[in-house]
Image (cartoon, rainbow, N blue to C red; front, side, top):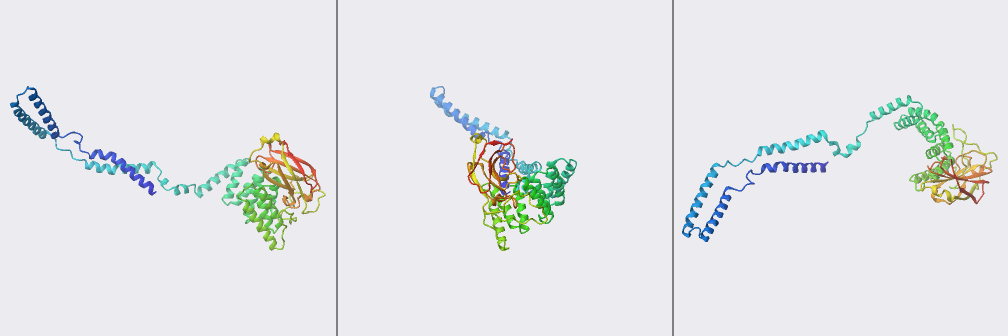
Length: 428
């Protein structure tokens, strides 16, 4: 603001100088005075008289007489000029004063009318935006439009998020319920739906919110928001084992160098401390966790345990190595993600253990353990036989997409070492 004012004053002063300085100059300053002109004429005439005397054209005794006549004529001419000359022009002080006031006044008036005065204060410009009332009106207009188009999934998604952001949870829940019918297999919709329900219940995830979270994890076992909500729900019910399982899965799903990793590990540490304080200490990280209790007012585990499942043991693991077929090397980008997971042979599709790393780490040695299970009771030790799969994801999502690269091992038993997987197929 201060800098702008200083620059404006300086620029106004420069503009005034261009206008006023010519007015202040004397009108006769550009022309020589009459006295100076007569002096030059006398000098030139004297030189001519001297030249005539030297050449003999004018007698020497006539020189003084010619000079006296020249001086008399010059004095007479000067007196006539001064008598006829107009009086000196007065400097236009009145005009100068008027211009000094009018020019800045016009400039300021034009700036206020056509410029952007509020730009002087950047904070004011940044703060200026739609009012709360305007936002409410925009959301109401959106609601009216999407209700006229019941099949407009993007419109219903925008309405649901808008209502949720405004804290109008009942209307957000209504929109998410409609959206979930349009997109029943979208983990994002189910997780956001659960979040709104929990907020409407005073941040309580018990009941239907937990059910929706578990449905989202069936669709995408590494959905980060669903894992965080599930971990919170389990902790609220003092299900420490289940909470740690969800949060550790979330930690493994984060990309390398994630800013969220320290927060997630801090939560895991806090849950373990609370479990110890409650007299329910948990095994160290990496060891198999005991099956957590079923959540209150929530459905049974997300998927049934495969027939012939063995009790959970700390020895349930499979290890080996994943390599990439050289023919597919050109199709792997620096930002691609590698998933390595185990599925029960002949059982549910939900992975029993999963590992997420960067595809740049190929070839990659791996070890899947019971600690990497996705759901209570669904771990390597619970299955008599498993198949290990590896997939390179272009999108980074856990759900397979066309164009992903994959490879599968032979059927092995939990506890097997040296499993070899070659990624050699492109998903159609």
